[in-house]
Image (cartoon, rainbow, N blue to C red; front, side, top):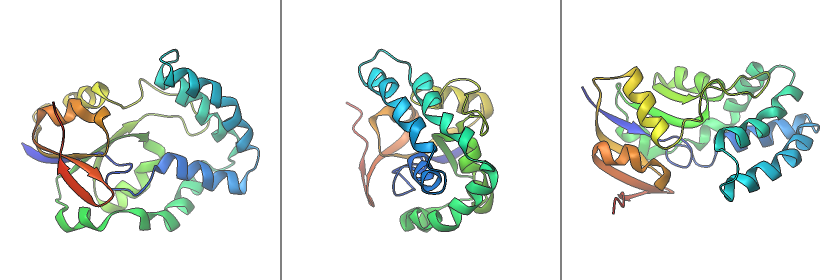
Length: 188
């Protein structure tokens, strides 16, 4: 089956939904900010190649422990942030599109359900911030897609990041997204 595949953050969503949700929560629950400060050393370690991405992000998502009703907060978040979805995507949206994102399932699920889109994302516990498996990033995106949809072939692929080169390489055509502009994905 030939389908189109999209990254989410900074691709069809203007911004980073995980960071936007964090800011949304921090405005209501200031204790969330303490967790962000505590995660800075892990993100620095990740940037230096000393800390695995999943562990660094797990430390960041600890802030969820200070959000009383995460599911309800996610619903409130999307009431004001769905406007960040890009118009160009809806102009070409197909019923069999697949979104593959490093953002958490709990964050994307209500929006994807409302848009009637299939998606794959990082499995993060909304109560503890702990991951079930690896961060859905790079080669992990390909692995999960093959696991869940073994017969899928990518026709068109869209991403804002070279981290998605593994998906771009297996697509018939791949595009780099910067804002609303889409150009050929640099595979060399």
